[in-house]
Length: 471
Ligand code: ASP
Image (tube, rainbow, N blue to C red; front, side, top):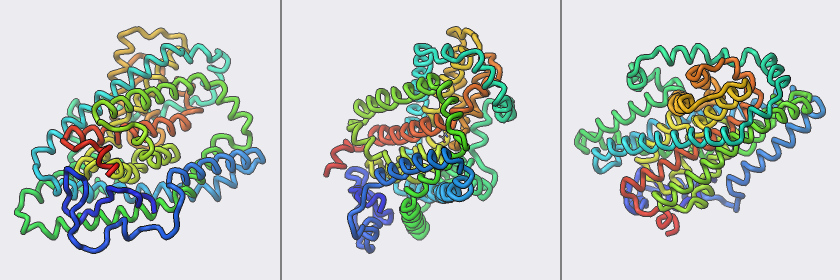
């Protein structure tokens, strides 16, 4: 199945060895990997997903060209929706049980606060770096200059209502007090938090709190609870593996229905729209590539002592899924499994990744910086250094405030636009290509989370993971 080639596959019922990453066998029956050993050799998961994406693209284009896009939306799209729902279904339970299991596996609870501080520091630094790369790219390439006035007015008219959706959110965000974000982390009702996919931070808080409480009691009084969480963790990971069996079909349906949605029954018109915004889209893509290839790869090499190529290879299933779903939240279960395969210890990955899916969005912040300056350029506004600095600050905050769901980054873009005095109606200029860019920025968002997990794990004393994986 999906991750069974993983040399680090851990049986959560075993005690974890923080140095070697290898679980110590307790003779408690076969491990998950043993139970799921394939009978026949299968193609690697990333290849199967890639084929699903390729076929979905071809299928969507053909059906749009012959005017059958509504058939695709009626009969194919539901498969993709079910697939994404399944992933979201396991995300919250997985975060809860794996984090409790991870915390109770810690030898020293004091490590938790230093892990938290280091994680937030890396999140903040990479986000500021992402916004800066976005600003440099957009100021160098100046995509706004390539949009003719006629096209600009046409886009503005056609997507006139695009910016209004984010206004309420932006207002609410601005009206909240300075400590609102901290207050919101503490849920008043855990069942309410568990029943909302947008309350990931509250679930993380509860799981940490519960894990710490379990650790505070003598082991003899909590053995059953620890075992329960360990075993539940194992069951939910098995569910993730089972969901991933339909991943190729799921991404096929997602991509083909996306094309049908975008192109409708007239692909020519969609191509024309793409053409008009191609320099802007290219600017975002160049920035995202620079972020991945230069920043992540360099940090992994320098501070993680990790081969970036190996990292990207292991991460490919999560990246392809992020691309197909445009959702960090839906990708979280697979990202957790990829981090396991990367060799990141359970207590680190279960802490860093759910936190990252909510607050660390390098791709989104980079895109928000590019989009803001592009809109300014298109309307002939000159943004000075003070404005660009304001963008660094607000895009960092807006990306933290964006949820890990499709389109959230564009909603929060309203805040960045307002901060430099631009009309929110300017969003109309970029909405046509937003979904495509959302797919790409989500790839960077999940990659940034996993990279941070690797760095934090190293910083918390893990041996070189390259060596561990090669054993
Ligand atoms: N779709 C992105 C994510 O889930 C958020 C965004 O930029 O819209 O990470």
